[in-house]
Image (cartoon, rainbow, N blue to C red; front, side):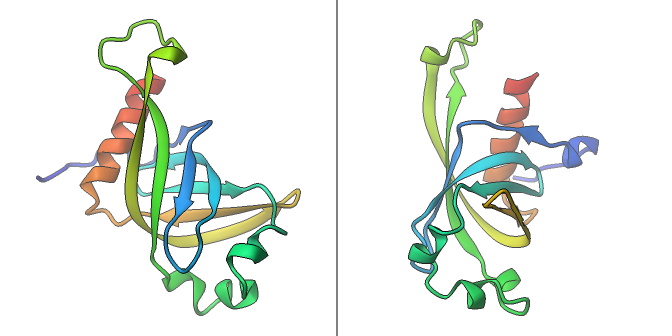
Length: 139
């Protein structure tokens, strides 16, 4: 399947209530997905102190030469509106998950919350479909 990207590629969709669960490197930690775009997404972790439990050597994990080349498998848990729902009622939403492979590209610390931006390879058709669904829901 060949997917063409248009000018909306750099459009970001803000999400609330979606979770990101990391599956690699002994890191079974949950973060909150802040927004998504065709080329990536942002995850906010609620407490930096709790990271040490899941990433024992945090300084090595975030060293400038290593952390950007790590590829993570991440499951994003979301709820989607069913196709026949016109009301937007939350009770009509169904749970859906999207498994992606992503590379961390930036990080910041704001108010004791760790934010990490992840980049998705362009060849990820399932991710592009996921973002299209989210864009459709927000219109």
